[in-house]
Image (tube, rainbow, N blue to C red; front, side):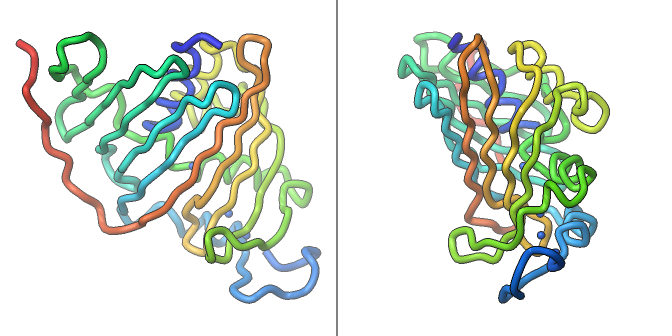
Length: 225
């Protein structure tokens, strides 16, 4: 897989991630309706740590991001060849390091205002598929979660998730098989996203944790002239 294709898909997801008791079997402690959780989610800003891994080449990274508010955060991406790129997004700019051998930060204009790492948009698309997407209550890292799953053609993302649509299309992806686990607050706790890139199947796994109040991300240094 081309490094650029992997990083484009992961970064979009990193910078662009629900449950109902009915036919899901016996009642589960902490059970909730996924549609209600998604509907009430997305209102209160919060910070979250996200760990991403591509199964195909072990590339991935770790991010600390603010969601449900203007996108800011910091993440480190490691490509399959071992190279590392760091990004910090502040209120007024993006800062990149790892683009060359100097070790300095490069300041660039903000590339996005909303993080696609808030998978609420994906959850809505899965819920729209009806009962087939509702897999039932499970537990994720000790937290009651609802498991949603289904196939999404990339064209379905064009309206609700335009930046994800652009990145996946540019990488040659035509569709994704998405498994998503959400909590009672409508927050994504885990994602498994299977797709074909450069003719090979890859699975992007995202794990969300360490939820807390929104944080401030300041500009790093030194910055290149």
